Length: 198
Image (cartoon, rainbow, N blue to C red; front, top):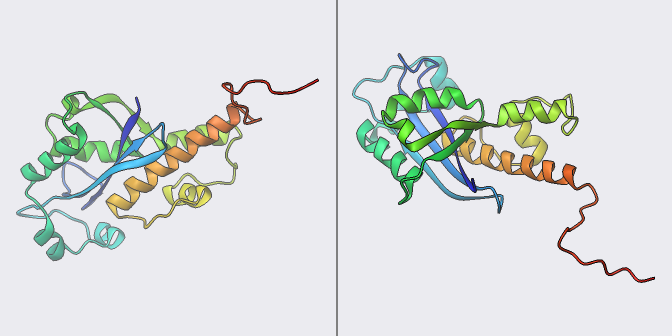
């Protein structure tokens, strides 16, 4: 699959059954070109916000400002659908960092989640663990998104949904490059002719 939609959410807490989904960041990665080709930042408005103060301290969201800029859940859900579908009815692959957390909140926003997204997801935290065990990343490297972004030189402003989604996509692109380099350590081009002379 050439495009993976990377997602990050900012929420009012850790429980999708209790806390409000506040923002959704989306970044579409072209895995062949290794570039982010589209992105969106969706804000969700609620009549009543169920939040923990600790969560707002982490993500820095001011609920008054947020409410003025946000869309009601039905409209926000349609924004996400439009981004994911982009004129196609094919289901997409989703990615993220510790992405199962984000998926739990997305499923509450999108009752038709399984019609939009295939079952498999790309989790850069899991991929990072694999690369560390394979000896392709330093064993001392942490697997937080900030750690990986720093290692690969990816700019990031943590705990902003769009920033995190974009950074996760670019970290994954760097991981793909790392694996490509590892599988072809000489950097040889299989399409290049042999031009050596005797």
